[in-house]
Length: 100
Length: 182
Image 1: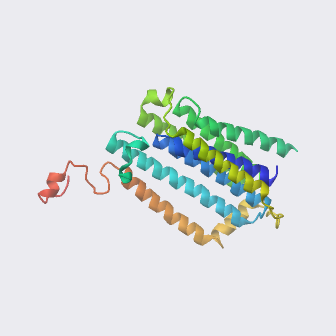
Image 2: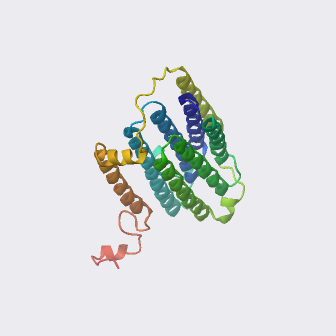
Image 3: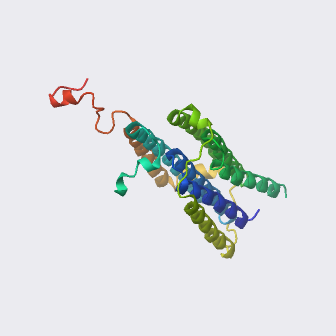
């Protein structure tokens, strides 16, 4: 277990999430892609902390990333609820108003 | 040696379950796969000695995925959430972008001359995190608390049926006539 191997795993998680965030049509599935990307970021931050500088600052950074994930989930669920209520659907293709 | 074996096992399960999120037939199974991926990353954090953060990730993500499964079944109906489905667009573009991103990240990871480790971890990592949060990094946590409060308010305003204008249309007449909404 080295810094490079952990970062490669984190990069793989990030890119799988990126694929999902770009390709999925359902809002909740897009959120799952974003979650997977943040999962990779958490792993990478943990690896940087452990292998480069195991000071408390790195743990605080991890807490901030976990908080960002929580915020993303809460707002994503709220937007999905709003979309479903107003459009009767939770597909991203039904929410392209700003592209017009 | 044991740590290496455990890490590689967790890494393989983590990435495989991450891939499974977008490969399995139903959204409910996708949610479970994502939960497994999060749990394995939480266990890797435990390998690093981050007991508190590892447990937080595991507990929080299991709860979040449970809520997500309920959302999927609630919004998509019982059958679409549990039945086979494939709802993707621009699959080839997504695969290309994700593949290129991984290639760039992997090149950076392997080519960068990473510095040596500086310092040693504290004897009690959870205690050191607590001291940091309540001391030198308090401003960070104060900002995070304000962001979380704003998130709660924003999410409720978006999700409530009455919306941000405090009307669902039923009392428009009352408003027009100057009467207080019932």
